[in-house]
Amino acid sequence: MMIVAWKHDAALLAQAQALLDSHRPGPGGLCQGCHELGHLTWSPCPQAGWARAVVDAEAERGAQ
Image 1 (cartoon, rainbow, N blue to C red):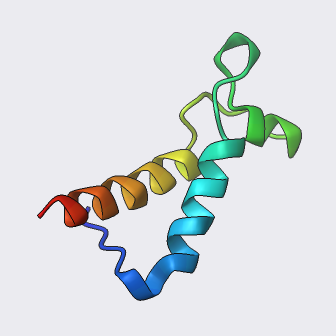
Image 2 (cartoon, rainbow, N blue to C red):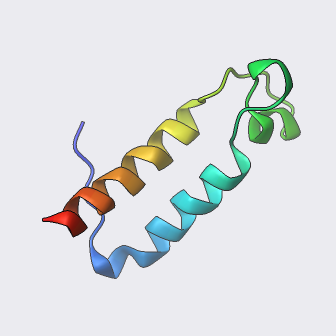
């Protein structure tokens, strides 16, 4: 899966960063962000995976 975040997609990148801030490993290996929403999901959850892919794609694009 290829994700490209362009400079005009600053809102997308900000959303990904905010998601990573809340969807982090919590006690017992569960995703803290999902747990706060009433879901029991192992970390990294699908939302954190998407956010990490967006952030990594932007970092890779910036390195080129």
